[in-house]
Length: 85
Image 1: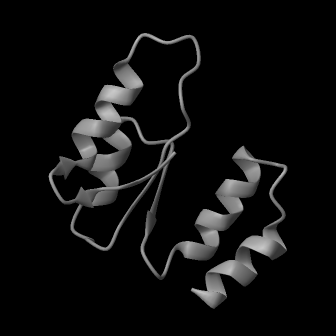
Image 2: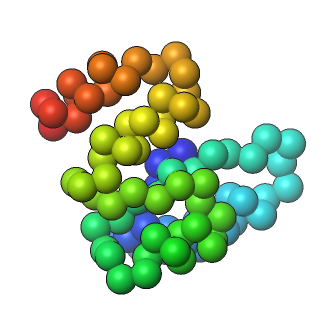
């Protein structure tokens, strides 16, 4: 799952904690992202995110993580889509 930390009406950190604490046989991999910089990455990781990326500057790193978690995706396709956005 890709979760933005700041969303209208939803606290991304609480959402991450809830997803990680839910009693399920399969725990989701959570990639958190935010445009905020002051400690939000550490807070996301402490809440249970598997990785954190800053918007814009960390997008290529996020693509690398996506291809790690979802090997059926091709990195070159994702980079092209990112450049088109």
